[in-house]
Image (cartoon, rainbow, N blue to C red; front, side, top):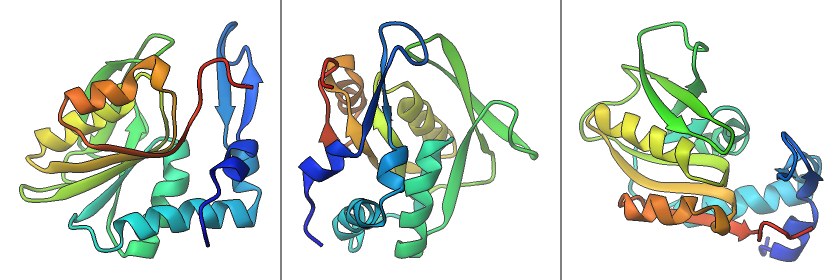
Length: 182
């Protein structure tokens, strides 16, 4: 299936003033409600990574779990879950980061990766880059490497994709929105 950026963008719903006034939230729920669109998104990522050399897929809590788990299944790669603080039951590593709304913490099981592992990390979108940079720091603390950070959406005006690149983390997104796009 050929990727159609326009049809994907029309299925990403802008929600004004959520979670706070002045923010336009990019809701991917309608995209996941369309079997054709979800297949187009998944197939695009699969085509990009099917022959790539990495060992694991990392997925960010919570919307990154949706696409990350599909790609892990399709590429037959182990899935590493990066969760919000307090959600994992065993020994964890924790990393603080700044969001658009304040400080948060990301955690991962401390035995998820080993030296020599290479991780493709997924989230639904790149905004300020805080979540993906925190995940990359956790990957590196386990002596593994980040292959690439991937997302469906980039919000380049918030600077996250540039911060990731500045941190030597290659990035890939399927589409981008300006902050004022409706």
